[in-house]
Image 1 (cartoon, rainbow, N blue to C red):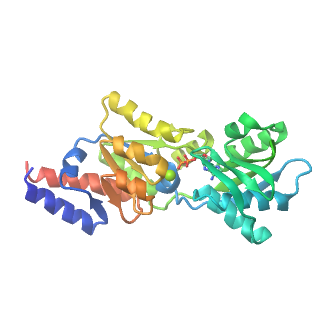
Image 2 (tube, protein in one colour):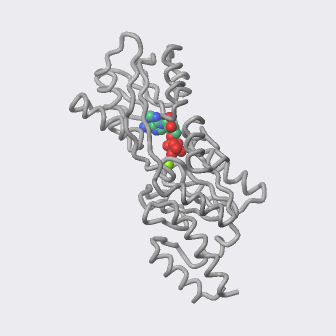
Image 3 (tube, helix red, strand yellow):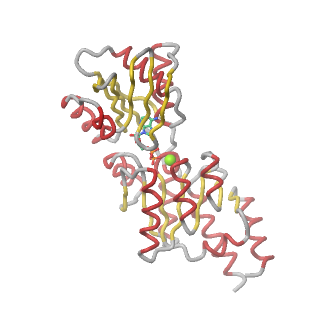
Length: 292
Ligand code: ADP
Ligand code: MG
């Protein structure tokens, strides 16, 4: 490839809202045959809203929202923002959390109003807390209907379930159809639960869905595909996507994504539109096609 043609390609990319780190990136894009997409914030808006509050026996709804809201107010996660925003709406000003700890891809914990509050996946809660089987059932039911259900515990006992839901970006269905036209195999990769992931996969037309992957596991999935002979593009937005973006043959970050994701990626999609990932791959094939 001549440097000039590659530069023209990167210039054309910039016009399309596709920021390419260097001309050499286009070369690695040519052989990509598999595209791994993160779910939250990539395929979906990543703007969740609280749609259901389930309280355990004898638990006060306002207190659940106040303490869980206070805890989540310290987290930047889309799930946390939805919970905190709804809590502020429904109970007013939130208490401040102390000893806040983020357990990446699993949940958060801290002390709020003198109570130890833990919120996250049920597997995380079950490690250190008693979980009432009725609440566990409510959580499973919420997940079957496509919600992301967060278990909340106070001082070592589960007290409620908060259900948040996220919408698809309107362009994601078309983006996946374009991946297929380009001959790419799409794979949906998420830390979220299997039911939500399957639902989103069905809505956008992706049948290979890998769910409940811990942050460190995303890079392993990419490595596994590469070990199987695949040339992998990865699209993501989160801190937890950064190692996988770096490992992929081509890493693409959403422009709305975290700085670490953008730094780890080869390409930034300024418009936060998954269709730009297909556009980037088509552009590089075309650019290289003209010079061969
Ligand atoms: P994704 O891969 O879809 O972007 P993450 O890896 O960020 O999802 O999160 C995976 C799971 O960890 C979430 O579905 C949720 O159950 C739990 N989780 C992560 N952060 C939080 C938080 N701040 N509050 C509650 N649960 C959380
Ligand atoms: Mg994400």
